[in-house]
View 1 (tube, helix red, strand yellow):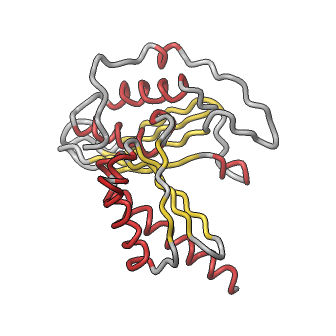
View 2 (cartoon, one colour; view 1 turned 120 degrees about the horizontal axis):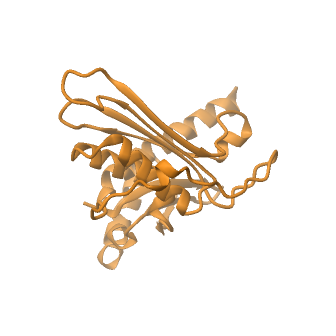
View 3 (cartoon, helix red, strand yellow; view 1 turned 120 degrees about the vertical axis):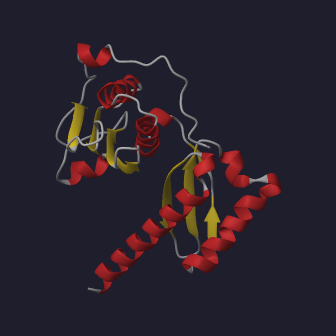
Length: 218
């Protein structure tokens, strides 16, 4: 029981830290945070698109963030090590944010989702799923659900823990839309099968936009 309570407590703290960092580091393109506790230090690694914004001039910003970790979350000897996102197309939170922003600008949901999952798979993902649920049509229309899934994407068992997941809510003028993105990163090893390259269906392969990418650091 004591171990279970400790596990739950650690999970709650991690969730609170993640939410706090997302609110403070959104301009840096925050994607996720990893927390590793040792008997000596608590190592916190936020993954962002622009590490320079987190570090700040002369390390001022990261020093302030470290002090906040001590006082707000009662962490002993926290050490923050900023990491740059290697590929934004393989980060579920960044993909979901991009989709949410585009929905608020009135981009066609189906075409948008097809384009996003195409880009995910073209960047080497072994599996991906994008779900948009809510007011996808004009005012007065019923809530709908759009789901596109490609490749191998386990939903249960230990293998499901290898899937990266993020959920973002978009707020276009007709009503809220929930966006869920699941991605199996390149090189993921599953105990029960060997995943090969996935062929992209023609209807999705043809999807695309002639538009500038959204700056998620604004």
